[in-house]
Length: 181
Picture 1 (cartoon, rainbow, N blue to C red):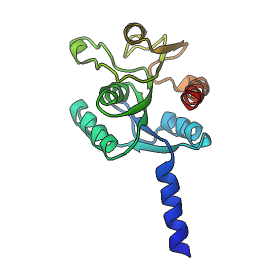
Picture 2 (picture 1 turned 90 degrees about the vertical axis):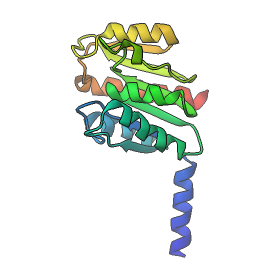
Picture 3 (picture 1 turned 180 degrees about the vertical axis):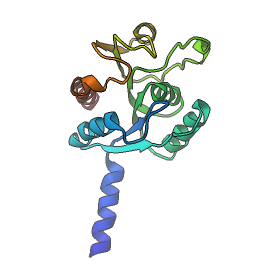
């Protein structure tokens, strides 16, 4: 009987929509932001994954997320912070993606403008801090305008952790819109 119950649990996990987190350059897979946002997703009944990119350059990160996404048989909700936002947007055009939630994404960086990805055709929400001294808020404004993304500019810095409650509320709103659409 125990084995039957275990197999039902794994089938139920497989049936859930999956949110995949991609951390930033100096981040970690289960940092403060990811943990807080994961709780929001889990409260909505979503399965959560967070990939570990520590020590990896951007192209290897894209390949890792792409491989992970291709192993899934359904669209994913991709969430990324800074370089992780760039990675998530890059992969979104190559695999079925239900939605993109990007925090201070590293788009249009000096010397790397041509590498800013074209996102997949899915709902996109961006949260960016006005006081970001790593990735200028203007970069997200430009991206949002170009791809008709929903943009939330808040009184925060690059890490957004001082406004984590607000970011979680915006993520919850994003997930509700995905669920109703």
